[in-house]
Length: 160
Image 1 (cartoon, helix red, strand yellow):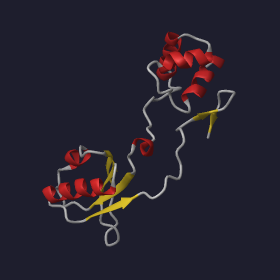
Image 2 (cartoon, rainbow, N blue to C red):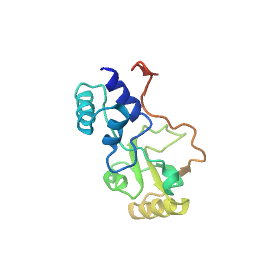
Image 3 (cartoon, helix red, strand yellow):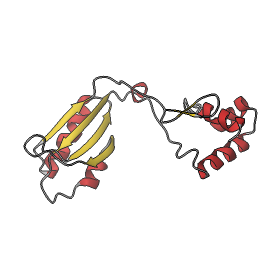
Image 4 (cartoon, rainbow, N blue to C red):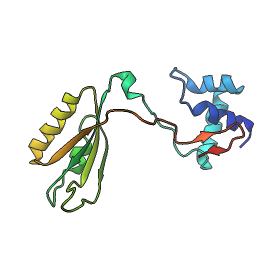
């Protein structure tokens, strides 16, 4: 990596500009062309310096204010995981081992919707169709931390 690569990483860290040609804008800020920005990002991706570039949306700014973790206690042999993961607003669906006698839930989903009532409606409709009677809906009340996965200092080193 050279200083230009480091500059590109610093430009990417807070997020891409929300404009038609974000790489052209990054190029303008770093003194190179849009094509060179794209080429350098691709090279950094190919060599493992950058693993992924993905969108991270500030949900509250676009009206998604209800975020919930739903814990599901499903019966043995249940096969609805892909249906559950495909529900509107679900960003995560995963399995965990239950704690017998203390916490029997083994399937978890993360839901993002505009209102709590939307989340409850989607969850209760799905539960009814699937015959699931035991689930917990846990809404987040405060966002405590939102930072990029990797931070780069002015020398190009990762900040942990």
